Length: 191
Image 1: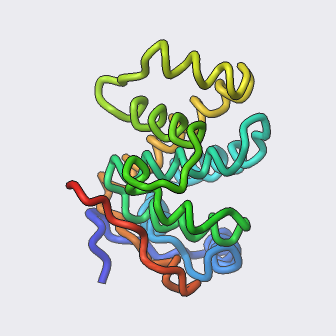
Image 2: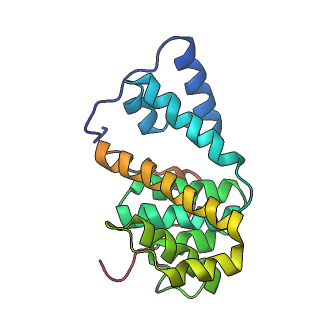
Image 3: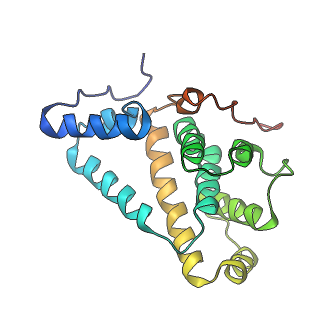
């Protein structure tokens, strides 16, 4: 039973069949947010368009962006995004042992200083008001260069759009990672 705040709509018509087929090919199931947002196709199409555009960005390392997105999801509390990020890390051949540790990245010893800086930056951008400092930006600028830092910043902004939308709509994990027999995500030792 879905816990979404807006009931999922049935995906109908030719477009619905196409979306279902593509979703099942990519994820093994239709992600819950698709059914919820199906109520407003303009918003759905915008989300798909943003997702496709972001996938084409290539100036910042994909692994760093993955950790940043998962750090945002963990901070916001989007279990759907966090689980999907873990699932996607597995499917994209990223280091799943590290991806598993993102919810407790401050306590874990598996991350490099750059990866920690990226996750700290993502969390600082996510706070209200944002808490990005000149020092954070300077370290990342020196390590990544301006094009990658602009991309990372925009990527974190998109992650906030996705995680906050899903959380507000009541979308929760569909346990995609469990379907790959991945061990559960690490849990921080502090709330």
